[in-house]
Image 1 (cartoon, rainbow, N blue to C red):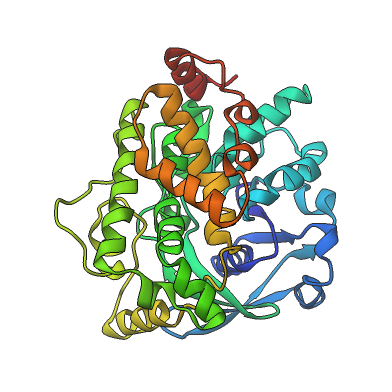
Image 2: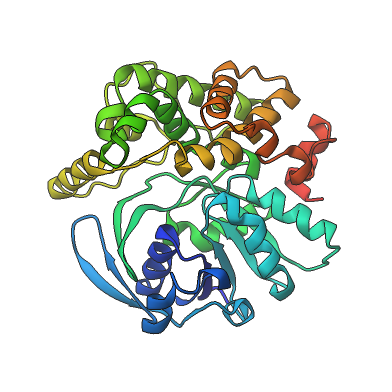
Amino acid sequence: MKNKIAVMGGGNGAHAMAADLAIKGFEVNMCEAPEFRERFKTTSERGEIDLIDPIGQERTAKLHKATIDVEEALKGVGYVMVVIPAFGHKRFFDLIMPHLEDGQHVVAWPGNYASLLFANMLRQEKMKRNIILAEASTLPYAARLIAPSRVRILSYALSNSLAAFPGKDTGKVIHDLKDVLRVAPSENVLGVAIANINYALHPVGSILNVGHIETLKSDYRLYRDGMTASVLRVIKAVYEEAVKLQQALGVTSYAKIPDKAFESIEELMQECEGIPGIALSSPEAKEFIRKAFASATEPSSMQSRYVTEDVPYGLVPTALLANKLGVHTPIINSIIELSSVVNQTNYWKKGRSLEELGIATLSKEELKNVLQEGF
């Protein structure tokens, strides 16, 4: 079963993962939600994905299945890779719950606190199945669909933390995936969720550049123009608050934050130990990534996922958890507040809550036990 994998989703990351795993020799079923059948039509009809890697090499990956039939996609697979935006987690898990089989592993890429959300949904539905849940702090790659069924991987994550829920099963998942998708173990799924660097990069970069974003729209380049030394100082401050929360949870596999200030986004990504970095195997690859950062056009508005996903599904549960554990996060809180004002949305209420994760009433010791042993 380990060699049979279902990749759930039809976006950039899902296409990249499905193609990558198929090229590596796995039997891959790719499945999109039925409401997106038209967007998925080319991939489902071809049953193939064209993959371009960071140095420009192109290969075609043959999928075992490309379908909108969830039952068909999940039948007999060992791993179910959920590669979708955080706002789609509940929808997709509702789709897959009736068709999960004993012994399967469900991994969210990135997690955004998905493991506890899924576990709590299973518990509420009283579904007694032997399922291992897990999540990673980010995707294994930065990727973009450049045409239907054609995806370009811009860079690979050098460091990607992963944990299972319950935590006692982390070793099993790491053993299966570490040589395939570059993952390293973390103590628990909350430590993994907090480690997502996008929570710091995207909302901070967007809020501090809101004027330019709203003026230039699709002509704006956040990574080229917006990641100034001053903005990077705020990003670093947000990440330092996240590290304090990881420490409060007993997580030791957090990123080491260097004392120096950063002058560029490339410098931050490559020098912060433990932060997902960039796999650069040649001067040509380095130049390609430099150009990729310079040409990335997101965000074109404040309704971008840089705000509408990373704030409610990343920063909000992080801040709520910090408050529960008595960790002071004034910079994170301020970014949530400013995002709420800018988008006229109360992200504190809209965001992922501790009640949804099933941990709102747990003491610190109870929480640590649940993370290790399960509900």
